Structures are given as C-alpha cells and as structure tokens.
Image (cartoon, rainbow, N blue to C red; front, side):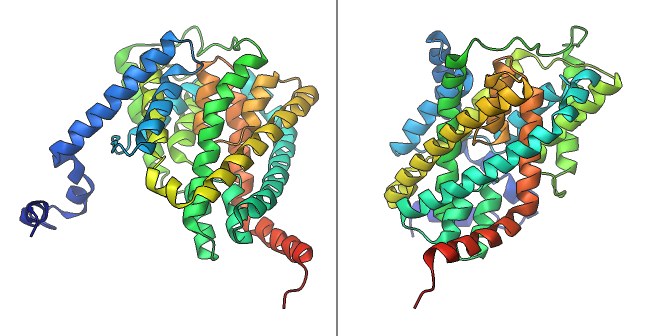
Length: 378
C-alpha cells in the first residue's frame, strides 16, 4: 500500500464527527504551505498591478496570476470560507453607504430595475441560441449555461433536466471571469472614476466597533444560509448595513485595508476556478463560452447607454448594473472605483430575485421556442 494511503488510514476516522471532518484541512501542513504560497503570490500580483496602475489592482492582479498558474497546472489552495469573508466585508461596506435619501432614490428606480432585468433575460436567451449553435450542445445545456443566475443553482437545475453540468459550470465561470477582467478597464475608458464617498463623514473606524460590525454581519449572513435569499454572504451584510445606517444606530466605515484583503481573497478564489483539466476536456465549449460572454458584454454596453439616457444614471454605473457577472464582483468594482455601489447592488439583487423565481417558467417558454424553430423530428 502506498505511504500516503497508510497515513490516511492511520488517522482516526469518524472520531471527530462532522465538524472535525469539515476542518480536516486545518490539520494538513501541506495545505497550509500551499495556501500561504497562493496568497503570497496573490499579494505580490496585487502590488505589481497597483504599481502598474491597473484598474482594481488588488482583485485583478491576483485573478490574472492565479488563473495563469492554475491553467499551467500549479496546485493552488485558498482558505475555505475566504471568499465568503470577503463578501461579508464588501457587503457591510456597501450597506453602510445607504442613507434615507439614497434608499428613496433606489426605490424610485424600481421600474428601471425591472425593465433592465427583462432586457438581460432577452439577451441571455439570445445567447443560449448562439451558444447552442457554436458549442453543439443540447438546448437544455445551452439555456442554463447562459442564464443570468448563480453558477451553482443553474448547474444543479440543468443536471436535473438532463443538461451537461460541466458545460454549464465552465461557461458561467468564463462569463464571470471575462467580465471581471474586462469591465474595470472599460469603466475607466468610459470616463474618470466616480466621486461617491465610501461612507458618511461621521462613520467610525474604531477597530472594536468595526470588528463588532463584521462579527454581526457574519452571524446575520450565517443565519440566512437556509433562506431563499440569493447569495446571503453578500446580500445579508448589505441588509444589515442598510438597517444600521438608515436607522442611525451606528455608522461604521470599513477600513481600506479590509477592502484590499477582501479583493485579494476574491481575486485568488476566482482565478483558482480555472482548472486546466476542465478547460482541456471541453475546448469547444470553453471557446463558445468565451464568445457568448463577449456577446453579453456588448449587449450590456448597449443596454447601459439606453439605461443611462432613460434614468440619468452615469453610463459607468449603468454598465456595472447590467454587466453579466456575479453581484460580488460588480459591487466591489463600484465600491473601489467610487461609483454608485448602492444602485449597482439594487439592480443585481432585483435581477437575481426575478431570474431565480421565474427560471423554470422561462425555461418552459424557451423549450417551446426551440421546438418551433427545430420543427417536428422523426
């Protein structure tokens, strides 16, 4: 028997229960070495990107480097729960920016949010037909691979209906990654970064108060795990921050160093999703996924121009609000670049809520449309 197998067998199995199993990585020295090396490389990449004045350097630097290393076959490791902790910090920072005036302005944009979500649903439906033709996959796989929902949710629902889970997962990963890599550069090219303040002038940066707020945000997000709320690790802290800020109970400014660490965690995690074996096993699907990602980005740009003209929102804010990426990456982009992160958050939350609640109904309509186009089969 190989030595590694003997070591595994020598460990007391099932003596620590589910909790010990969940934290088994903490007792593995090799994991700690790999994880520290990963974050060390991510920090160096962020520093270089900052010196080169790349937009969103502390997220894009680690993302680009970790993506390259992962695709080269290097085994990277990130801290379990690191992405969630980053989301909590960003969510709390954004929630604390809400004032009664901003909240009222957000509600006034409700019709625009619904219209924007319907536009995104039309774009993703069109993208599904493009992807189906390019990748030569089943209609079910094409629909859920391009739907504007979370990768985990879409992959599971697609598999339950006979779709190819790996194709759905890799296409969503490419969509988010392509958007994260391109959007900040495009936002800068559209104009100077925004001037929105990070928090109110009376916000406290006292370490004890900041730590208490982060602990409360973590506990609140954890309590929402079993709820139907999309992405509780981001949305939960946003809600908590809104309640605290609007009520006037407390106003906390999350320090910049915490935001930088959150970016590092998110960038490294996102880059590690590019596993070489998956890309090489599905090359046609990967290339097709890249193509439809660019199509959706172009559609988001066109929609942003219309949204900006209709609402008066800056085109940069409108672009981030319609961008085909997860709420986490777009909100952190808006936060760091001093854009209207509150409005970007509201548009993405509305999109997630509508898409999640109507996805099966839209899927049924999509199947009818596919049947009409394909015609009767023998």
